[in-house]
Image (cartoon, rainbow, N blue to C red; front, side):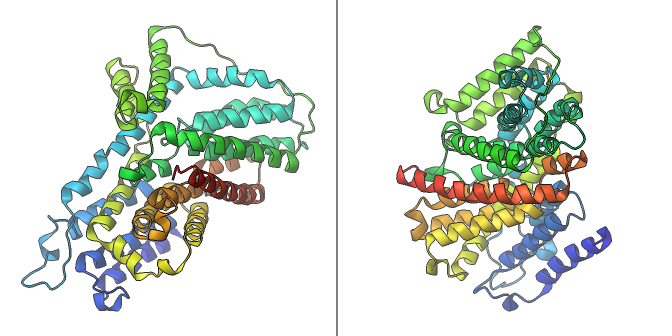
Length: 471
């Protein structure tokens, strides 16, 4: 489907949803605001799936449409006149626009500053050099080291940036493989898979995790350290399984690999500031139960330190992935609209979820997230599903007995990151595919297996956490 046709469908279908009579929509007592929000949700879904425009642009359009159509300061022609029978609850324009300055956005920005400073002063490359050294020169152990280091970096850096760095480090290693050696495929596949899996490990590891924090509040709140407490063991096991799978499918025939990463730790005051700030920020994130500052506040420390010391300059700011922040902001705004208008609750009320077992609900929700995440942005998938899942978790008493909101939010969030079966599934997959060393069928075969194993492991993790009364 060409871009013009995608744009045609992405515009006409939501417009049709908006223009059809409210009575035709099979939801009882639907208000005008809720009707318009269904059209906006349809618009977001189609634009994020078909991508006729960049995904971050869709997020900005979502916020604009909400302000114009359903906010308390919406355009005059769209406001009720006279005795409007069922206009519904308009959403505060302040709440919609606050999406751009949400504490969640500030937390992710802190992660951006840490990653940018680490790259600028070669902390990432030097850490990779030091951490890879203990794994020797046998290909299978070098592969394991590569995956563990990639997973570690992606816990605190963008998955895309981590993949770009590790593929660059890997380039001379790949040249040492004979042309017919299948091990080359194992090494190239290992990088995106480890980056996607590693992102699960921290709340800032990947955008879906950050979106999840929006709904993990109050009794369902999770601290930075607590998240890592259950996510890190999960990703270590999954990385180990992935390593064994890649060796099974693409066992290297080369007996010895020479990994030569050049560099040394810098010792000027700026580099030392980066090292100290990086360590201090991570430690503060892990010990928030002790010092009392939550992860959002701690996330502002590297921003303030690096900006005030000119370690991060205006030119560095221009290189950051601001589009990711806008994409997350659009999801936050969409979630606010679904919640404050009452549409999310109405959708839950009109679907007989109470007739299903809580295990079936969690399974269906996570499976839907996995399938969607293979064909569209992981962040967009989280933006679309998590607002509804949040309301579902608080509404169903059967789910409340098993962890409620926390259980279903974590299950859907983890499932988003496990969708990595296609070159289009994630930017790391696309970058690995662009090397020419792997084919789409290699990604599909390995991605489907590791996604399925990851889902089973996730259900076991949720069961264990529920047994120990964590959820």
